Amino acid sequence: MSRITLEALGKETGKYLSHALDKVWLQNGVQGEGEVFVLEQLKGGRVALACTGGEKGKYLSHAFDKLWLQDGIQGEGEEWIMKDHGKGNVSFDCLGKEVGKTLSHAFDKMWLQNGYQGEGELWAKRNA
Image 1 (cartoon, rainbow, N blue to C red):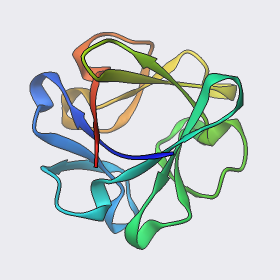
Image 2 (image 1 turned 180 degrees about the horizontal axis):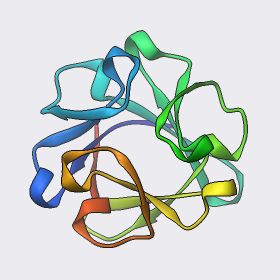
Image 3 (image 1 turned 135 degrees about the vertical axis):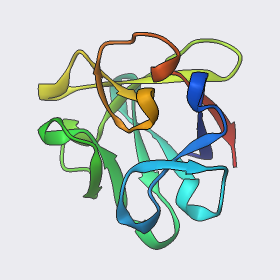
Image 4 (image 1 turned 45 degrees about the vertical axis):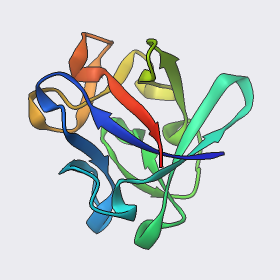
């Protein structure tokens, strides 16, 4: 397990994946624990993104085809396949009913994109 931040790349460079205020959004810079996740390694090359700070105990979820924070890992909706794109850059593919979708920050919003399209789905992973 490692503590990480995820910076959006492309047009959203400088914004970070945030779970602050109990919602999923893009924050300008790292403001505190709301932009820090614990990267948990699971079986079969899967990962989970656990929240820190005020949202501790919650996980980034793609269940029901939406991005939100779930209490604990309930199933594949909180599991991701992290793909390495080199130079510390990664993308996150969904599992379960959302297989084929990728975590996206394109168009300055958080959503699930149909597959990896480019920088809108690319994140700079850094140790926090």
